Amino acid sequence: MKGFRLTEMTWEDVEEVVSGGDPVVLLPVGSTEQHGRHLPLGTDSFVAIDLAERAAASVRVVVAPPLWYGMSSHHMMLPGTVTVRPEILLEFVYDAVRSLALGGFSRFVLVNGHRIANLPWMQLVCERVQREMPRCRIEIFDPAYMSTDVAGELGFGPVGHAEEIETSHLLASSPDLVDMEKAEDHPEEETHLYRVDPREPGDSLVYVPRPIDSPRLTGGVKGSPTKADPEKGEIYRDHLTRRLVDVIERM
Ligand SMILES: [Zn+2]
Image (cartoon, rainbow, N blue to C red):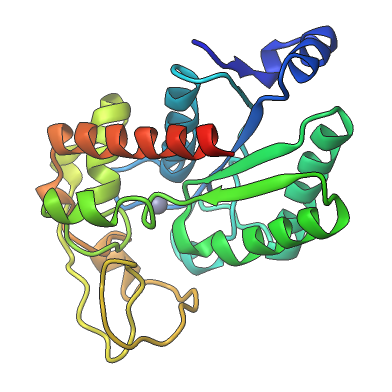
């Protein structure tokens, strides 16, 4: 590994890497949230951690400890989901970034595993960081926005929930945590003037988090996880890792 995990460093290590080039800090942000009957509650966190760790294998970065919780109020209908209010998440992540900035770091990437539900408050964090700490630069890396071409080439259906995209990623990164025998397809019905996938063209209302319809019937799935494929998952996470490394190298 070329990068470092913050939790495995000493304060002297931090001082040394900051004075030796101020590496980019990656902060994985996920969720603990229902992902159907076939994927673990930590799916979004595993995705964010996987991308950060894989980038750290090839480029000199510091990986901060992940945030395992997100804003998941729209998934509270199935047990095990933990939701944290966006204003708390905003303050928490801001404090983490501010602490690291006081320690000398100045470049940050929030690696998002929880898709659009995390983005509004993450954008607020970034605005505040840049306003209050002008020497810092901060970006948000979101898999859906960073895979618009490759997801189409791989034939992935639209972004839903616990669908073939997330399932393929986990089949590649943590196959022991996926139970494909329990995967069931519940394709999303077309909703008038409403799209959440950045690949989909056309007019759309802006995303509002809403509970999944009939969660007991669908098992909490929106999409077609039975189409998931570990080889596609490998191509997909390779693409995202290259994109993340590219973002880090250009900061
Ligand atoms: Zn997810």
